[in-house]
Image (cartoon, rainbow, N blue to C red; front, side, top):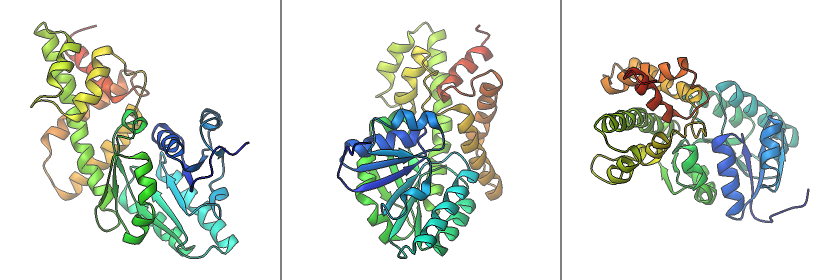
Length: 302
């Protein structure tokens, strides 16, 4: 295909909700982006928007020193890491010349395993989870929690600025995921509290959209109220910015960490059955804003 950009080359592995938004914003910011995904539909969707697309992560090795991964599972991360490492060894890539910024929400111990695998091939990996929904990703309203080697974080600095609003270096490798777990605990609670508040107001006789307009910017508002309140008011959860089935993975990681540390989390614990009910009620592929529909059913509404 014809080259659309001659800027700094960047690879984005994983063109799902978050990865496609990051890749598109980086391209628009002047980078020459190669998007990688196994899914033909994802590649077809992004072909007009990026410098090039492909299905093999190995194709990025030797073509760029900046790679971002946004992956759905530990298995995907390990497969991608193994392919990148194998290609780096095959090409005799100079140690430290390639940095992988891993943005997925996955257990820290699994990210550590991927990091060790890549390090043997001379590839530096940093742990850089993102705070924000898919809708926020589209508008570059993301926060980067970067952790790991300081030089590698600096190496990716301009790339991070190409798709995010704020960037933080939070210390040793794994601190990024820890910060993300704290943020996602709050997201889980605030999402349900938004649904609870809007349903309460509806039963008081208030218009849901009017509540969103009035409450969102006040003392009772939150970013989740601002982002997901409008989706609840319009029942717009079919257009998922975070699918409930994917969110279950994030919830499980947080719950496991809380249990391991014996940290009480009564509000988070109270949210778990609501998200599970959303799965049972057929909302697996819907946005997490669909918890509003769950509470409606709890209230006896059809």
